[in-house]
Image (cartoon, rainbow, N blue to C red; front, side):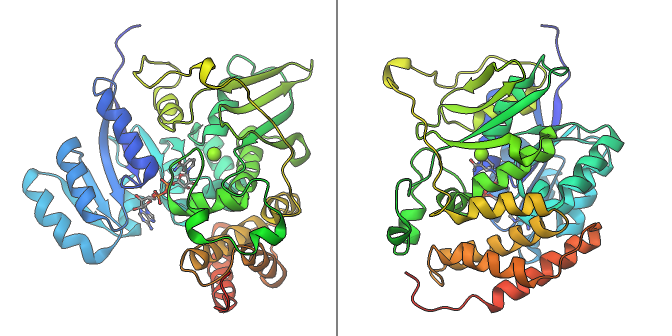
Length: 392
Ligand code: NAD
Ligand code: MG
């Protein structure tokens, strides 16, 4: 393969689960990738260590109170330091940035991702909430600016890989695989009493706290259905969720001739991150290889949408459209935070989301400022309705 120019990457959310794994990918392939920007919310110590190792052009710390600590450490080394959300949206537009890894968690990732798209930057997208909240706006803007959005979410990376070379062939169905999370097989009664600690123990993946809880409620898969709709332009009834507890098949595409393509591999987010960074090339890696002897059976089952209501709610808002996915997302973020603080029980999460969907005003054709207002209003209503009682 001919020698390629190095890609200069902005890592937004560098101290998180995806961010740190992205830096592992870059550390292993310094001839291909370089770090141009590092950004995180409040973990100043780790951000400083990362900057000293990867020597980016600039870093952004979200938390203004931590600005001085970071600046004192990094400015003498010639690294520019900024703080706050607005700075982040500005630096992602720098001419020297080739690709932006959107790996901030939640709604907080929307603004900087939109800003990067506005400046024509290629996007490696981990922050699925961006597409859940404002999928139409984001994909329209990306098309207008000639921006490719490379999925980092393992399921969507799998679908993207299955679609390589198939651009003229119609998709009949997408099968999104789900591990089922730590509570697979539990009845609604049993779910009433599960704890935060149990919910945080994911069987196959080590991830940030928010997405780990989303995996336990199956909201993560619901958000991914919405994400798939926008990335691959498929109708909700063409997207099926299938529980596959081993997490080896990362998702599948069925074409009009009935043939199904699947993408497989060990559950390791470095693979989809690496694919998004390297596209259209596959570079050699030293990641552990899959061993068939260790997985004598790969199994599949239907999701239990009666017990795990969040998945059904996500399909509902996708069909309703407008600002309802934005309401679902904001209510979910507040509910998950309340569950993580032991303020509400596990089954109250979908209850709170449903309450918000019924009480926040619906807007059929929301603008960006409508999303900002919907997110704010939903957080207010959800916050008022987090009633600390018996958490379990
Ligand atoms: P995490 O909680 O481990 O990390 C989140 C990162 O975002 C941290 O670096 C944090 O500092 C930063 N951040 C949060 N709020 C911010 C703000 N306001 N300003 C600047 N930085 C901010 O989360 P994660 O598990 O790495 O997930 C990140 C995103 O990737 C999520 O949208 C998640 O759904 C998606 N994703 C994660 C995985 C995974 O394996 N972890 C897999 C697929 C998709
Ligand atoms: Mg996923």
